[in-house]
Length: 99
Image (cartoon, rainbow, N blue to C red; front, side, top):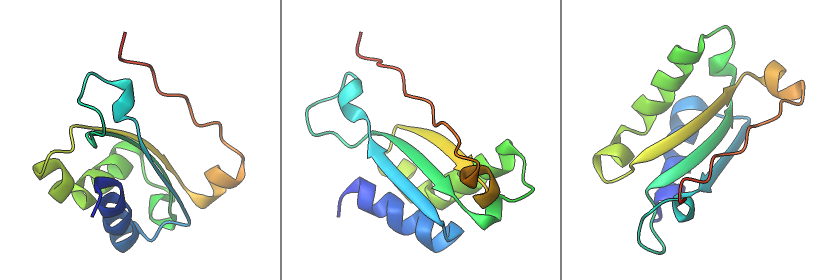
């Protein structure tokens, strides 16, 4: 199973997202071709309603602990409540780290 698929499965089981995008951004970094080490997650969940950013990120990190233990190096997180997502938020672009 790919790392992306594992991320999807863990986040779905833990946070029941209403919207979830998992984007492999490894190609933007100095890693071997076809690496799965750097990801961007855009997730909307009712769990995030009324939670501060730190609590949202902790929940995602906790759900993905197995991936971090097995080689996931970096994760960009964009966490939204359903109301925030419905307001048509603009998800920021990731920086190009490859130089």
